[in-house]
Length: 190
Image (cartoon, rainbow, N blue to C red):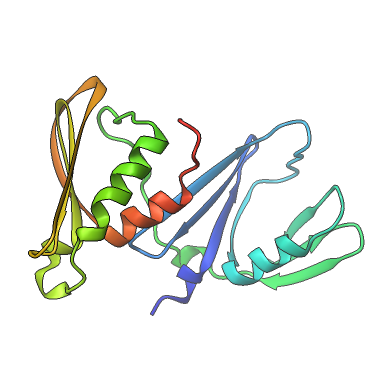
């Protein structure tokens, strides 16, 4: 229903490049801090068609890539022997996504979190007539961490202890979303 959600929003500031994508259930934000090999000439915002942008990036050859937005809706991507032109989607229609963190973030190793997700999310329900059963319950109480999922026939519960103490929190995360998180987490213990 919203074609702009097929795009990747690129925000360029004087000191960073931010890429944002969402499907209204899952939102991802990647920030590229400027370093010696990135030169920003002018600030701007555009939304590039995601599928085409990813295909173009995979096919680029060479050491340098130049991105240019002109006429407020045309993007030119130039590498050594290739030039691509894309029509930008209207960035005014892109949903405003708040990535601000309220409170103290929970710190847990990525490998431990991936194991928690793998060992619990399989038991979550798929029947959306009982929406609460399609998620994984994340329960934090001081240093205790529990993840629980059930479809009313199966029950999976994983308990572990955290290094730091956190305030009591209990949330249900859709199993599809938490499984997507597991896919993008790297195996390093960060």
